[in-house]
Image 1: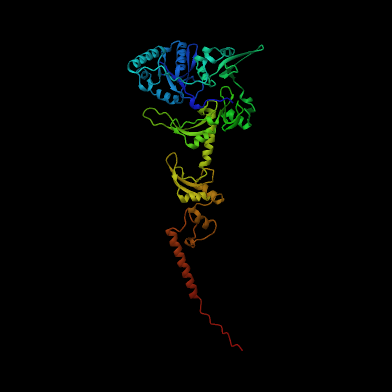
Image 2: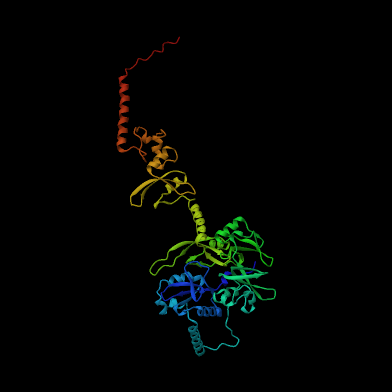
Length: 506
């Protein structure tokens, strides 16, 4: 496994472009003099990425400008890769005339055409020479440190692939290669070996040779179904293969052996363009403290560093005068990109489904505090936890009409709702325990039990009834009085019987 720079060193910029109609897009390349663009608000691997420091960007932009048929139609903006979606959203809220008026928010990102940039530079140098002390001979401008130099490249190896130097300079690929990265764009390469010719789309990278020269390496598109069984000494399981095909990231650390023969813990991902597997050392995984308005918790950072997909709540970019919305989205560290990435499409849906399933299971382990916006009392929650039934009133349907019913609950499940008639049927069949308010009713009417308050009550108890009504109480008292009167009358009607003589015991 090659030693790769950590994600914190990836100082890459994205070019945004706005035409005369005010349409803002992200630059993906130039073809036949026409600018190729993509939507900057989408997660896209086809965008041009260029170094944000030094002469590399100037050379790149000058080359791109010269390729365009009508470059003056466009306004270009140089935006940090990690901020491109936020800035693009802000830009789209403004009209194209704002660009021409030099609005500060836009001007700070705008890239001047090569001639204007040269004039601006000369003016700045003149102003500096007049008002600032001269730089001493020992002082040099701090240029960014690249892993490789253009003069060390064996350009014959590039020509052997049928690719011209100007081609990779113009589309930003050379800059990525000099920084030690594998390009995120592909080019058509051609192989000729022993009379056999082959062409395919490949990404490029640089690799030092034994003579010190840098050889251009081709990374062709592989068949994702024919994934290798072993990767740098790590045995790839069938489960790993399935996850790599579905999401692109293995999702857990793997012990791999690098080219120096050392065993290291690494995250493994699939290059989504070439299907090539890539490893990134676990010790170099860098998770930012914040992303799109979300501050990662220590637990989230720990899980992300272990390769897990984590769903977090991010802030959307709101229009002027509106409040930003909070939305959940899955993020995961990609070894192929060497940075944190949003998961979209099928990849995102898989992560969201797993998140929702876990959230549902976790949330349903505790007795709910509310049901359909109605707060449950502590007594009701205890009853549900014990497997009982609880009556819920004050519910309102979509048409605004009130209704009531009964709920039961089991751990891991949502509360089950029953209308009164369904509850009655379930109660008669013994499928549910009676609600607390119906315990007396069920005990008296169904089980033949009695309580002191209903001892003399002849009528069946109604729902939630635990004691006689006023009328029933009066009826009970009249029945009791009538019963006592009958006992007294019976005693009076019976004549006194003479006492039997026991006789004289002899």
